[in-house]
Length: 277
Image 1 (cartoon, rainbow, N blue to C red):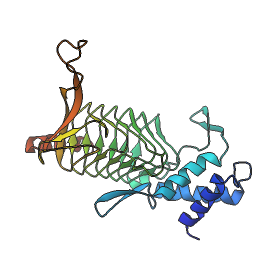
Image 2: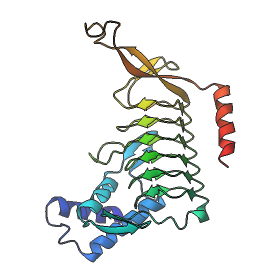
Image 3: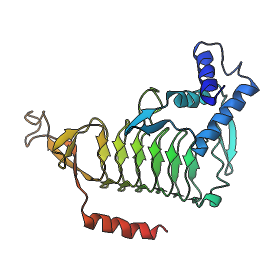
Image 4: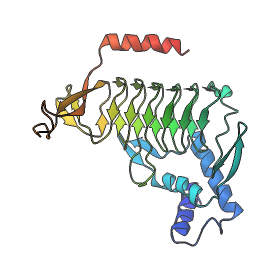
């Protein structure tokens, strides 16, 4: 049987109550370890782009959830501190062979996360299980990458950015940041939002399906995604509670404005890229 079929079989047994952490065998745990290895290698992913649309691999999310339901929590020593979890941190001993660097002393990569070649992870940062980070991507200080988040190649995540995770419900698409995207410091991307290839997002921008994107290139209002090659930033528009007596001068709610990328913006980004080499 294939890995997918084996994981699906474990999932059915676990959801029916036939298989629990008490009845889980060494072979079952070995299968889960094999599954985590494939996640870390990048050969399987929680979501993939097919025919220009991102599709969820539900069986992969099932496999991640099984690692929590079928494993017992136990003490794990790391860096002189004892943690209590079901999974250890990832083995990063081969990073240098792939040109990837993770700086001391608080770059935490959980088992089951994929980190590409020539990537940079600055301390402190956290990458959760099922997340995928592409080749040449920079994860800056105080960044958090949630479970199953899909980060493309040559992406720059500014300091203090939070990339939300979507593990449950399993059918939901996780946050996706496509190739060559640049996020300014303090950005928040949540609830399965998708940022299109080549876009540049200003600092402190919140991107979530609940906030409208006023795309001035296509002249439409869109939700849940930012098209490729956009320059996006936060502005405030009048709220529907603007006439409430509690708001003497009117109320406002956040929105995102998207424009075409200017050459001056690209030039500034290229200068910053040179500092990373």
